Image 1: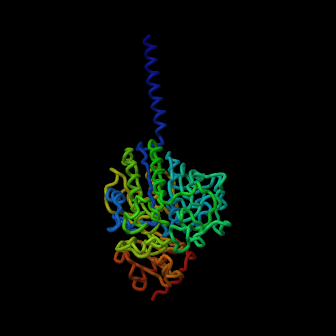
Image 2 (image 1 turned 90 degrees about the vertical axis):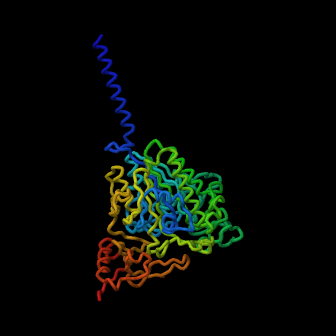
Image 3 (image 1 turned 180 degrees about the vertical axis):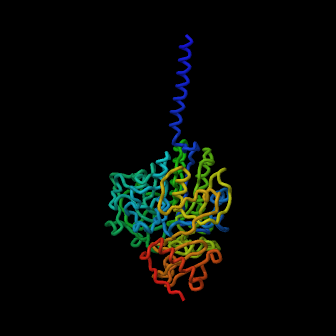
Length: 521
């Protein structure tokens, strides 16, 4: 009898150990080899938000309390960069850790451009998926879809789901480009087989009104480049026919994306998740919901920034309510610098007042000057990051390698530097150098110095009234003493200029840009 009882005790012990092993394996996706719980990761990516558009970065007239709260509770980087002064290249670099100038197709994409990221390419969501993460994107994509010949009435692929995202709820390109529909996991939301969608960027469809020919149908007047198909009273870039039930209502877009982002968090709160929340604000057309109209006193551009700040606050509140803030790393930034008139008459210039979206910087979107790529850059992780301000040089390209280090992945990217301790506020040792880009033109940042090679072309983009950084001469600035880039020191510091040119050539190659032989005097 004793032997039988002993056997039963051993059997119970074995069963308990076996169940513990099974439960441990079930939870292995949440833990690294060290036993630490894997943190959730949320990247909040705004569109055309300037360095000076945020209270934490000096804005007084424009209020952004929720972004400011993240900055106050985390690391506020004063020297943080997008990789490019335009959207598609920056988004490509963010997800791949690769300089966009390495890919000749990494330019501002049309709404029918093929997928820019190769499906074999390693990406942040792919890396995290391999570590047991759920991965989702909500918001603006603008990295191309399909093979360039998309049938919008069937499954659209390849796209976000083929480069690592388990879930995607996106707009194909930008709010001012057709197709003006939401796409969920490759399918147009609200598609109707009896009203098929057709998109063309070369010619209009017979009988379809346009902003150019039918101004009486518009509720927003175009200034330049936005005079094709009319959707929701707004003229767009490109032509579209059909899909009436699927077309979005611009004023509801922020709410729609926020609802999907919150839904994603609630659906995946039990597992480690990665959410790429890509807001459309303050890109044109600026269409705040009626709740936010007039809130900023600066017209639609200011109102949509206030709206975006509110959305960010709501998203963070959702994380807090679910008890996730202490296990969620939040990274907030913008894809490039600010622009006021970017295609529509919306009082962005007229109602600006004393507000300076570029802050103390020079230039803006499309520019090689600092305001093109130096952007708000904040990391926040409740109880894990000590609040501070960092002057370390960092780039969005470095997020790839730093996240890999955080989750114990061995994946690497050619241009991404591992700066995890910098992002967590434990180190001030950032990058030594960085290549910056604006519409395929590039410049070199090293230490306190910025070198812009000679480029042909206008000094100012007339339509948007932004200095582009083009010059017949080399430009050399000491940003520590001259953050506004007012004094060209190329002639005064020939040795430093030569050093910068040599390093630029080493990184970029000798035939990539208009680099002439330097004649030292």
